Length: 494
Image (cartoon, rainbow, N blue to C red; front, side, top):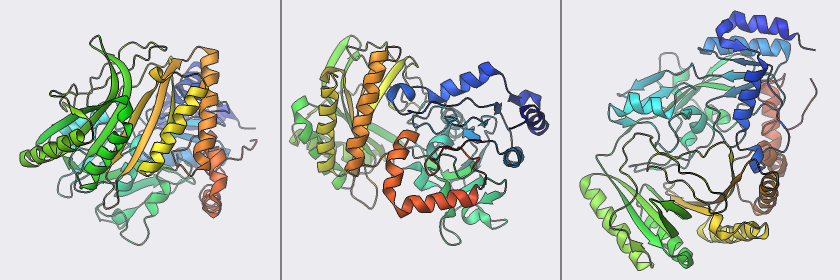
């Protein structure tokens, strides 16, 4: 039995009384925020367990001390960024210490090496203010301003470039180096910076990329306290080509994506089927967007090329895009929700707006070849229809990005909104998600895992899963790091 009073006093000794709390109302608030819409969408079947403490460290050294203390008391530690993940990364499943790292918000800019090193508390809004004024950006601004960049970039958020000659699907793949507090309190530096006096400029400087072990690990193998990423210049010229396809032209839409991406156009293409009201008007068609950036000549050439293919495949070009210019201002405003009519939100070009917390969002996602995605898309529609979700309520997003030098890999997502306070609607969403996960995992469709998904998928991975479990036992002998996630699925009594 843990002596919580003594543990509390020792935590105060590390971070100060103003940076640790055990108040019940605070524990409930952090737990509820971490869960967010997850439980309502069926991502969590097991109920979370409130933490005993919330601690706000301001340095790597303080985190090391907290980890050593947690080992001594065998108390779980749950690292968190901005608590906006929809994959339950920071949901406490066995109580313990919730580590709120928002005070660690330093940015180290290296213009000579064209990279930037961030801490867990750095948000997209802060990075834009500090880097945008100098003509740089760190990862495309595809998430709200209050989201922790590291929370996204170390855990599998997609990389959507504005003007790259090389593209990789996830920000984690761009990682140059990490600083990690291991589960036993030691400090690990990965990549070229592991050599004293060296700069972080290569991930595989001295053999294998050790840092990759900690990416997308959901805090189960250690706490990432610094991440170095490439620095990008804001393109001098930008343009968004907006086309439209009728509902029955879905195949033509996918052919358009394939043709444009197969011709080595770099950047992002996406489309969405959405019934939404913009300025009092409704749209009931596929909206198709091609994001272009670069020199004036390059943007002009690619614009004409994209418009030509859209027309050849049965689409039309809108003379003036409703998408706003990339203003870097994060001021997207959601409209009111109507669950039956599916009045959705329209974000600005560079900012996704998260719906209100009383709105549940059920999303079915799939990724693969174009033929696979078409099959999965049709199957997802049938599952939704089976459970009574009418087509008019469904928002479909379809994204294609070039993963140089590989062929483009499309991703789709079908989602609908529902009243999170309606028990019947909540249970319906859970049933839909359960059926979709069973269908998708049986066909080899991979996606980012919540604890519920992990229990189904991880044991299917054979030796891969066994190796991860051995790594977990080796690095975290006391099983304190974010227990119940990924390779650590066996709940144990403490």
